[in-house]
Image (cartoon, one colour):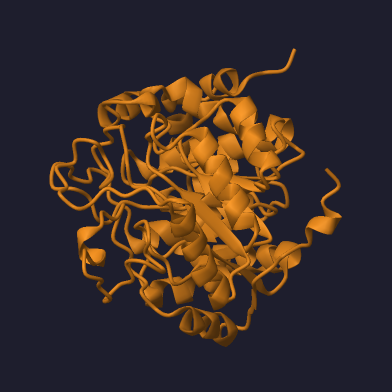
Length: 386
């Protein structure tokens, strides 16, 4: 009988993971570094304070593994927010229903979606991620499927980062042209999950955890997961994320797996980040995960500062966003610094503040300066045998 993701994750409670972290030492770190195939115990010691003096050795191995599996390439993508309406109340998020924000809530119509797609296509993008808040009664699955269909007129690869849905709704997205789904568990720690998700369907932990199984079963070709770093202790969150990825590799083998590393840097006034993740922590996280999951794609967003992103290029990322906007209409209608007669970008609610405002061309040049090739289109759908 096939084990479910809930059954699998229940085998790895917090106490068991803390025991793995507790055995870390100079000897166990060196043993993990010298292995070719690493298990979850090896990942734990590479995430521990005992591994800090070995970051340079970890970086060299991470670079080698990334180049072996992905070459000297960096795929580019951009997010398109099609709605900032949200019925959920996630205390850390600017979109939250009870965040107290007064900026405009907008859902793009067909023409608005098409304008956003056209603007990004002119920049050269071939890979986009459509995002919404959690408002399924207004921003319905039918609306999302239609947005995917519009985007496919402009881009070879379309993914979504939306609320968790049923398998038949993921299949509806795939039939409209969807390739990928991104869905962060936010936190794998059940007590914290309950504390920070106060309202809406997102408060259902089990339904969210099982979403990627449903997406893969529906034919989604790429699935991307991650924890929102800062909600709970990062070594535990990273271990749970890695275990989830390993499960998906085994049980959802028709889909490729990707990881993202979003960390809480800017939050609403009502939420204080209790478990901050600094730059050195994030470097260690990415290096350790690359050594544990050498064939998994890593995504690096504009949440991070330009100079920091540039330094991370050789250390494991395979996909980078560029020129991003986190508000609906941010590329065509409400461009940063540009206003019309009704409103401007400062009046339209953003999900979070980005850190890297560089033009796309500047990001592309930084990738080239690091010795990597920027890739706009990483495969042709003619080779997708589904």
